Image 1 (cartoon, rainbow, N blue to C red):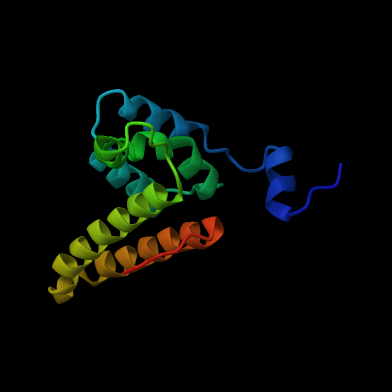
Image 2 (cartoon, helix red, strand yellow):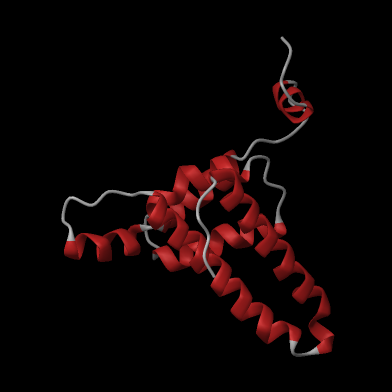
Length: 138
């Protein structure tokens, strides 16, 4: 079988791990953690681990990460479902949380490595936004 990209071929041959462990981790955490904590965990997983398909991992857990936003939206419209605007809010919140942490880390020169990591994760979040082709406002 011919795969569309090299990474897919490596996955099919078992040369790369899949994201099953991260998927299970987020699923288990979703049973007892708040959406805020799940968003932080998702960002941490992306930052410190090798995730094969971050977009798929995001799609698998967006429902749990967006529960608080969906709840608030259903206060005015009980028929409200998860949509691009709520997905965009989840991504924006993760970016804001990371930027707040980055501001704390970057104010001290001894935290330069952590500062760089926060920039990396902010870029990853933006990549997910671009893959979704969502309107992203500051």
